[in-house]
Length: 270
Image (cartoon, rainbow, N blue to C red):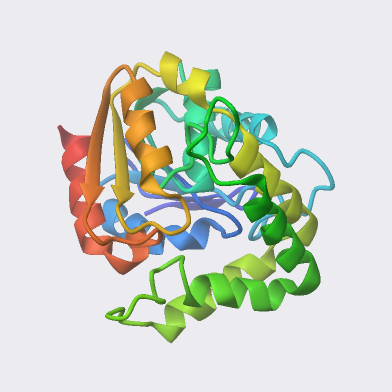
């Protein structure tokens, strides 16, 4: 299989119909290891980028917002000439993927998958009374600025993978890999990215997206509560399908990769 590394840190493997993977905050394309290996072996061309200032990408000073994120993906898609592509976004990457498909995907995007994703909007507003208070995200910024290394360990060893649940099977390797990915990126980008993933309103994006869209969410997601995300997104999409996973955590693409990969494949091949 061919491997191409572009200037933005893109991993491009295989051939066939392309699948574009968008990682969550504050991670990198490495977070899709289980999915990329699975789908390249199924004959797909898999592409996963490191968002600007994340992972191996260069550390830009500005542009840490959803418009720039989506425009960066558009440049990547055009550079690789990806057509009839499946766009799969997890968490922050779900908002990025939805914004790309709505803003640039006409004629190029075939399907969309939102996994544990933030849309329509995470923060509490008069129009979104079920959202998380702004103080929650202010606390993220406070902890990140005070001690990013410890904050990332706390997130990975606790709510992200549900490792704080009594019956959880904790993997130290998974925790350290999450921490490794996070610490590779720019602290400035991660700090400013909190506003991007929490305060961006994707309502109008969801309304205009007309490609088949699968919304996948764990009902024990402690990072992006399901009631104010997937349940609402599925209603706004013209051609959306909602699949709820009982007891699955936010990081279910890692903790339950076999289940998620099987369902992704079924949706893609349908």
